[in-house]
Length: 180
Image (cartoon, rainbow, N blue to C red; front, side, top):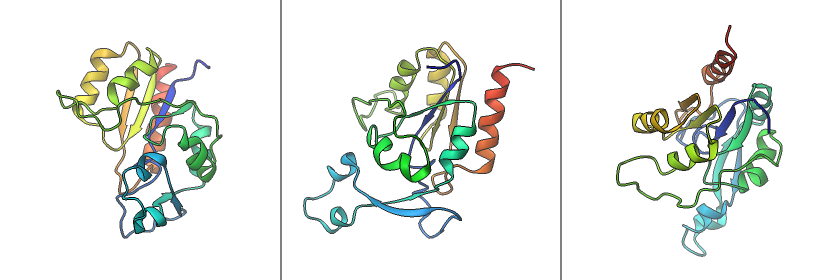
């Protein structure tokens, strides 16, 4: 563990711009993968299950992420399979820490995103940036009220994935922690 802030990464949306139905983003490579959580929700023997989940990943994202002054970790439903299936495709090490979500997709009665409470608990007061496509203002307010350290919740457009502006925001926020 280092004293660098955490960079908590979701896969679908930030790294896999799944919402870009017709666009082929420059530099992205299409993969067919079978993540366990997705596969379990498909009808047995279905064509969709046989073909696998289409995932678009940029092989240069890992280098860009590792160049940032953060300690990256996975905050995704892919959990440990992100190290196995996503990390090699984007150029990240295959041993990043993983937040092990216990209740995937559970609806919170207060409308909070189901990842938010576990992310706050896992970060345990350390400064962090959470990069996800489903963050809402309710999540931001919850983190502000329940997390003892600095935090930035960076919502990424799932049609575009991580962009230059997002990397610039990540860089600026990390440097703002160390002061002038």
